[in-house]
Amino acid sequence: LGGLGDIFSSIFDRGRRGARTQSRKAARGRDVEYVVEIPFLTAVKGGKISIQVPITEECATCHGSGAAPGSSMRTCGECRGAGTVTFGQGGFAVSRPCPACMGRGEVPEKPCPACRGTGEVRQNRKVQVTIPAGVDNGSRIRLPGQGERGSRGGQPGDLIITAKVKPHPFFRREGLDIHVSVPINIAQATLGSTMAVKTVDGRKVKLKIPPGTQPGTRFRIRGQGVEKSGRRGDQFVEVRVEVPESLSDEARRAFERFAEVAGLKH
Image (cartoon, rainbow, N blue to C red; front, side, top):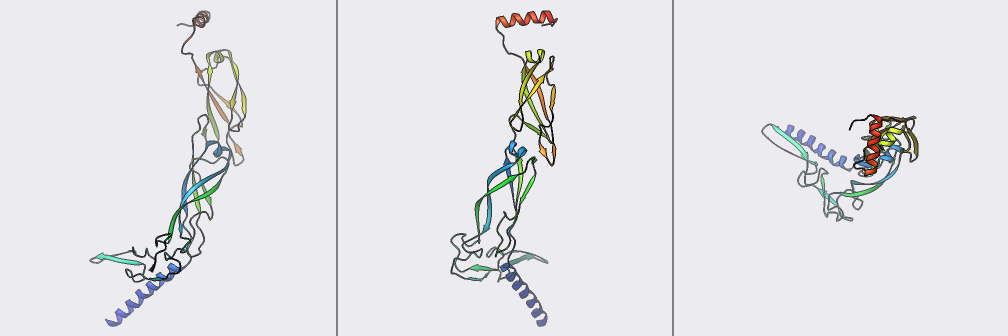
């Protein structure tokens, strides 16, 4: 029995030493995922935006050790350097990171004043993001090396941006096509007209409204949609006929004469 005890003791001691050694190795920083609201026209045409990303990083004062500069580390008395503690009842046992040393197996003799001994600090980082033209709502953009810094000199993680495109008061997007709704009066719908319609490029395109245009009619302006991967959609213009809420006496008499001549019941 004594021999078996020595064997198990040796195995567990090696495990604890391995945990302490692993805690001191360089480790890659964690990836950071962040949702960013993007203006509608920036998502369509592309551009650059600046964002503030909250990131938990290794403390620069103590380099992640949690110890104040000039102080040393000692073996954690709770886990005896293993970095984990085991608890259970009956035949079941569960291991979890040691709460005293946060899984590092060591605790500082004197805690770092900058991070209060945790070895990590929470701060906002300003990042400039290049938004590609035609980005969709929900698209993900990966920025290598912009995530959390690695511990013990390890490589930093990546920053993964999820785009949330803001709605626009005039334009609406469906795939590569742009949809807009414009008002016309009853005279324009009846007699026909020419009007200027805004596009996502910031230009205005002339649109001819033929006589007798009905409410809800849609017109296509080719090549004025979203451009992405060498393809470009169209812009669809839906007209809505606005009826005057009130008329002057003269306008009412003129409209009554028109209705009589046109055979319109009222």
